Length: 407
Length: 106
Image (tube, rainbow over all chains, first blue to last red; front, side, top):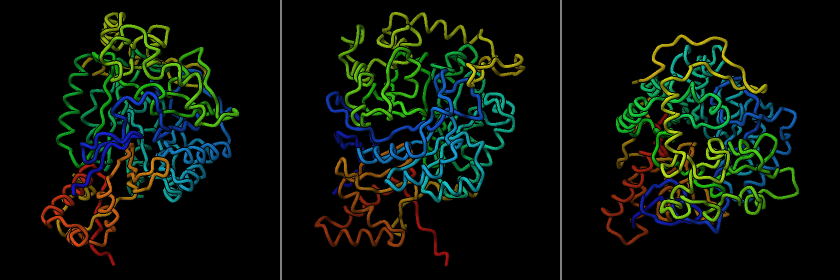
């Protein structure tokens, strides 16, 4: 006997690693089994105003949000069709008054629930109620390792201190904690301290996620783009910490793809293993998909089931698999490795979501984009455009910070 | 390093009383007709024997007890079974999905 815990994708292939992560490892272009995990963006309302927010610039207003009963129906339906995990996100999911009720419902229908939160609205009682409702995991975003940088990025006074407090309660309540640190030029110098902060908070995981540039982040690209030196230094710091903290802190690292040679396998490929549901109930292939203008996305409020939307809707099928690909993707040996990269990025940078992701060196505009990123990283202004429902607000004054340009 | 870290880096030994922590849930997935372990941002797929081991991990039995039960059931040599059990549990512990029952509190 030799017990193994393997890659448990819907195509349970290749049981090589005894504890592999469940993720599809080979092309299953014809099957599209229902995803293991779904992101539920309960609301776009949020007390923070991070300039790299992954929500679309056109935010869903509070009045358009699904009701409690509608979300409950969605959760039941997801569990029924085979989804195993639900990530409650936003905006700020705890801005919904019914968050405890929704977590309880997820538990009741057998979903593993994860709360992706800014933490600033949580009280200890609320967190305790969420734990009692069966919440399985808490993920708290941090904008830096101390209040000066962190509160400026988040655009909320005393936000950082509050986050530290909630992180402490999380562990006191014996909930597992992931620290999510979104990194960019103006906070990358804090990375070693952020890693130590995660250790001190007794976090189980740390996500070091470089900003991905669509929506709000694209508006703020010149203020956020890291320098090449910073990226080299970041990779070194992360790799060192991964070895040093093995068994203590699990560190996931998302690299900024502008500086990569090959594009990321975005969402594991469009419509292959992920979808999310927007506050207004749209079923989307990616949380940034609504940044692609001119695409129609089906809603859970339509007459169609979620499973039907996943399998049959035009939006999911448009960039599924490899048949839609233009050159240089079509004849590329890596086409089933990265699936042409990110559709949202292709749209943001070329105006056509059906083009090769410019992060790829084979894209005809790669060199130009790379050069622009490099220039912005050294010459871009540091002033932010804060995320809000009014299309954004420019930071009042140019910040006076050291360590912004370069490591 | 803070006191809190003492529950990290579990070393699985004969006396360990392993149990899944509350954030790692062993569940039978009806849709895909197989056992899975649900964990933060992860879904793991244990094979039949790993499932059998994990079902014995109740925080009361120690690793020796678990090996005894498997030796009684399977024909393989005790050393082989023991090594496999410890290796699988250690792998799970290293990934942060295994804890140990605390020494008696009552």
